[in-house]
Image (cartoon, rainbow, N blue to C red; front, side):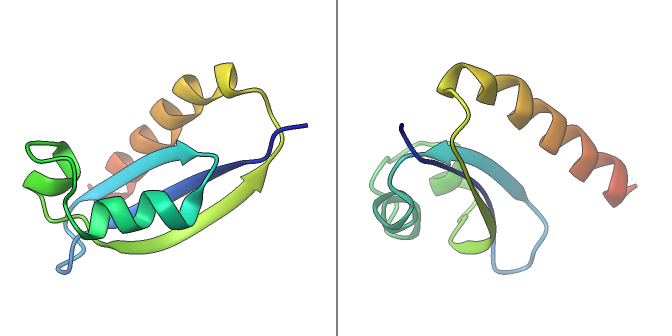
Length: 79
């Protein structure tokens, strides 16, 4: 059974929220912090701080919808 991480990251000023899903949290946070994917959303907005993560065994197909729910909730809270 595969283990996944649903995670939230933000920039230094905590003005931008990013949600993601990975099976290797340490590697993925490293990639974000070091801007290894030039031109990506996280690189463009300097997303470097992990603020929350959760471990799950749900199938990966579940996550696109979950990311949308998390992003919508975050946007509503900022209003």
